[in-house]
Length: 348
Image (cartoon, rainbow, N blue to C red; front, side):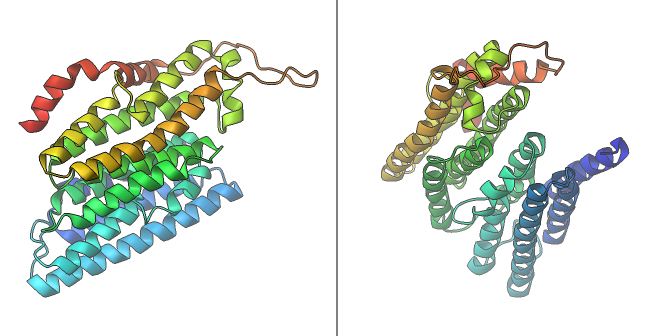
């Protein structure tokens, strides 16, 4: 892609998100979301592969549906209450419609069905943008919309943790596994959104760091399915030893960073007298942990068949920049000792 066109599209991504961040009017927020969507569509279809074009079409249709739903809900709110302000959501019907529209935009279950198919058709770099940056603007709006009844958010959250864990169990494609991982993590964030927005923001930040580490690792090792992970030991032994730790951090195992937000979320749910919900979320989190362990097993404890026709890749000097991966993976693995300071920051 022409560097000037690429720079323009990346500027559009940043501009759309910034407009949504800065807006207190529903029309401006909707406009920012639309700029964001229109900027990423050419990035998704730049390879002109039929699968990429199909994924782009599915993404555009899903986002257009969510945008139309959001616009209809905001107009309905203006008609019922006379207010266009994001913070003035007094009627339950527009509030529910807006939450469902934003859930469709970020891929919360049961409005998640576009997410795995779209991510599977993209390259890892565009998939990273879709899994991280594209979540910021809808989450900013979700944080500002405070429904009187938290039941809808809790149902969306607990459903997403189940679907994200269950859907990834029988997958062999890494991008689909990452999509279901994203759905499960979004469920954890939505569970605590109504009770502790700062904790939701912390969980989103930790999820971004862990997902960035994993996408960059897979990009460097050029892995797209589980079978290619078995040969990664020959191409990058150091990276092969780091990726299982990143995967287990995503699964939420102590003493890794991913344990921190889940621990704080379970603690907050217990404070709100939602112990049964916290128990169910923790049990359904084990489903996600299973396929992370499956990937770790494929990387570290399996080897490719030694038949005569197979050509094993061997170590070649890599010219890819690994400094961002080094910083992100260190943060993904080693930040748990800062848990007391982080908990104090969240309760402040």
